[in-house]
Image 1 (cartoon, rainbow, N blue to C red):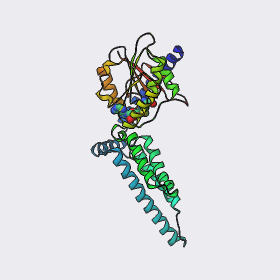
Image 2 (image 1 turned 90 degrees about the vertical axis):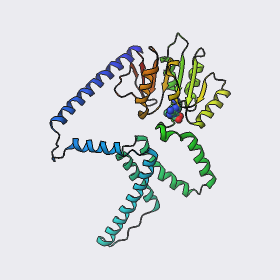
Image 3 (image 1 turned 120 degrees about the vertical axis):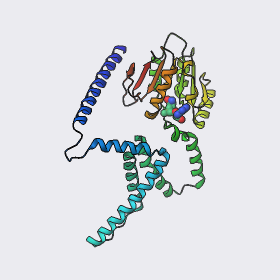
Image 4 (image 1 turned 60 degrees about the vertical axis):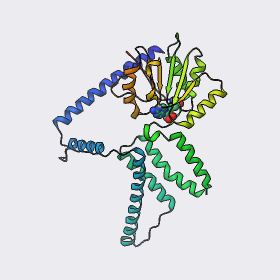
Length: 312
Ligand SMILES: C[S@@+](CC[C@H](N)C(=O)[O-])C[C@H]1O[C@@H](n2cnc3c(N)ncnc32)[C@H](O)[C@@H]1O
C-alpha cells in the first residue's frame, strides 16, 4: 500500500515536473512570439484583462446578482431580436413558453459566470437557480416555506460569500484514509478546520479514543447540529464555533482541511508559520499552489484525492 502510494507520489512529481517544463516552454514561446496569426497581441490583452479584474473587485454574491441580471437582459434582447427577425423576414409570429425563457436564463447565467471567472461550482448554482424558482412557482409553495428555506440556507451558507468555502461533507472512505494517515503510536491532537456536521471528527474520535479530536466551524447551524449529534453519540470530539484563522496551529499534530481552492494559499501561510516540525497538514481535494505534497492519495469516483504535507 505504502509502495503503491510512493509510486503514485513519484509519478505525480514527474507529471508536475513535466507540466512545469511545458509551462516554461510555452512561456518562452509566448515571450519570443507575442502576436498570434491574426496579429493580435494576446499577452497585452491578458495583461489588460488581469488589470481590470484587479481593479474591479466585486464580492461573489454581488457578481452573482449582476450575472443573473445580465442573463435576464440577454434573454429579453435575444427573444426580441428573434421575434423581430421572424416577423419581418419569415412573416411568422414567434412565441416563447415561460419554461423555454427560464431555460435560456439558466444557460446564459451559467455561461456568463464562466466568463466572469467565478469558481466552477457557481455555474451549477446559476444553472439551478432560475429552474428552482420556476419549479417553486409552479407548485404554489406556501410563502412561509420560502422564509424557512431562506433562514436554513442562511445559517448553513451565511459565511460562504465571505470565506468562499461552501458546506460540502466528506465521505466515510475519506475518514478511513485519514485514520490510517495520522500517527498510530502516539496521542494525536487533530482539528478539522471547517468541521461542518462533525462526521469526520466523530469518526476519528471513535477510531482513536486515545486522541484529542476537535472541530471548528464558522457557520452556526452545522456547528449546533454537530454539538447535538456528538451528545447523542456520546462522542469525545469537541466542537467550537469560530474562524480557524483564530486558532493557534502549533497546538495540533494534525490539521485536516476540506475547504476550497481560494483558501489554500492563506492556509499554507498560516500552517507553515505556526505548525511544528513533524506535524501533518491534510487537505481533501485541494492542493496548495506551488507546494508539492509529501504524499498524495489518488482519488476515485467515490472520493477526491487527499494531499498530505509533513511540516519540516
Ligand atoms: C467542505 S465543508 C467540509 C466539512 C467537513 N470538514 C467534512 O469533512 O465533512 C467546509 C466547511 O468549512 C466551513 N468554513 C469555511 N471557512 C471557515 C473558517 N474560516 N473557519 C471555520 N470554518 C470554516 C464551512 O462553513 C463549511 O462547513
